[in-house]
Image (cartoon, rainbow, N blue to C red; front, side, top):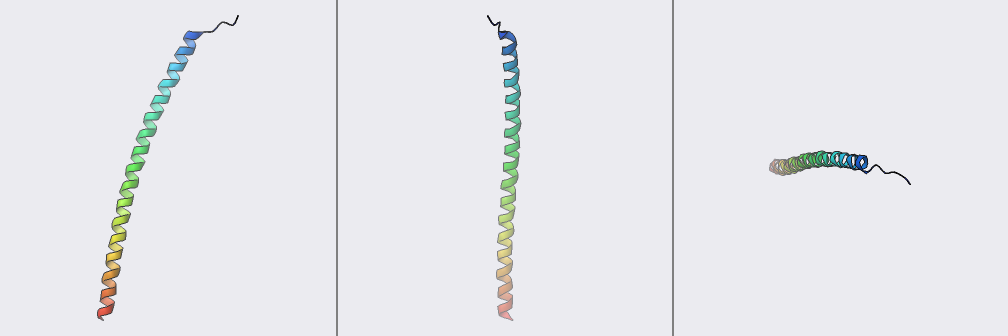
Length: 66
């Protein structure tokens, strides 16, 4: 008969679960940080794009006036 050491297996299993839960928290925080950065960059890019469009329209108006 094979003797199974259930106590050490349970301790190892609990330890692995604890490490995995910690890693999940780290990944969620990292994901949220990157998501926030991405949203900020998109908003900035949209604003710059709108500014460029305004500048181009003003430039074309100035060219037409002359």
